[in-house]
Length: 327
Image (cartoon, rainbow, N blue to C red; front, side, top):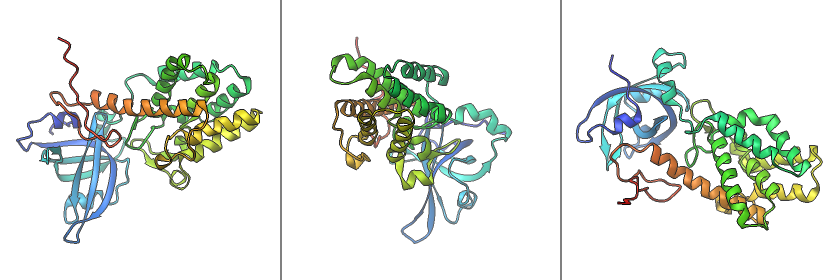
């Protein structure tokens, strides 16, 4: 039985040689499309903790039949040959089957299949707890604490996105922690921004994502996420907690506004444009960490020897992977 290969190991093989491989991946995306000849095919994204790639399975193939009814987020065993199309890794798939989480080979690869942040979940969560404890306004503190008492377990494990930024297990926790750290460094420069309100807004800005996304191994949008979206879901969660904590109407409205406007632009999903000092501040910190999160992820997952990353939609460019020459 041949050794299972990770995405990074496959991408480091000689691109000029078609190398047979077999491995276990997470089926992250699956879309049925129609070829020019009218026949259906599957466009699929397969990945593990170190990256992902896309490949096609045509309607008359065994791979199409094997994956047609497999749900996104499932673990699949794949056999194929390494190939590149327009300098992009796009292997030819030859066989596929769904595997159960209890499968012995799947168990042996589990730590390599599920991507997590470099920093431990416990350390990230400890920082969030400390940030909540530091909110001095009693009712604002109670509002945030009430939310975390109810949904903290989901918050700790949830992804922050499907594919754009911090799109992995504990990604929402990492993104929020990084935003808190960045905010604390920047707040002394902007005394017009109320620190309690900004930190509360940061911790709750993406709380709706715990309802928007679902899936153990690969995130997909839930029914309520499709129908309402995380901005509306987060607004509802914060409002409920604020009412129960007896937060005054002005602070409640300002906290809600941070959540409604944090996406920055209406075409990006914001319900309103940021119109308070705290909302502008949180929106900018959110945008900073989202983009730097993309950079950090592509740098740590970069195949050895590569100069540029693949095109990143969130940055609208490729990223230079080599460090500055400071000689």
